[in-house]
Image (cartoon, rainbow, N blue to C red):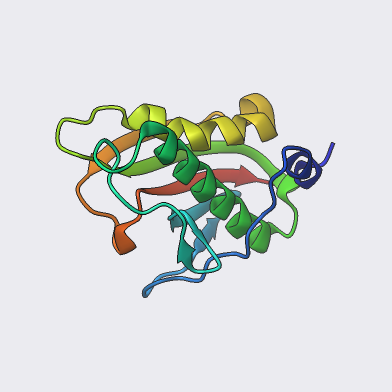
Amino acid sequence: MKTEEKLRQMGLELPEAPRPGGVYTPYRQVGDLIYVSGQTPTVNGVHQVVGTIGDDLTVEDGRRAARICALNVLSILKSSLGDLDRIKQFIQVIGYVRSAPGFGGQPMVINGASELFRELYGEAGLATRLAIGTNEIPGGAAVEILAVVQAD
């Protein structure tokens, strides 16, 4: 089954690929690796989940934010590859979680993205990963995710 069909069956759709919010490229391909710049939980340029996990947002809010970030990563990959089925495997996922002091559940938050990639790509969707807390993310976003994938 095609990846985009799986997304539809899950009740999800790819948002429009986010435009860069600064002086950078949304992705860079080097050989068969594609490096996707950090994506926040935006849809059509509007942040969907703003706030601090462990303060005014819950872990579940953070997981939802991470899932939106993952959809934006996929949207960027589709714009670069033309077809999400060209993705062979996820190599690395790095997630930043805007965290309240003392909050240590960053891995649970970033699971929102990792689980989506695994649902779509099976074992090839599991990547090496870093889930780190930070005090700020641009625009007040709760989460930011970047990824490296291998494509054919």
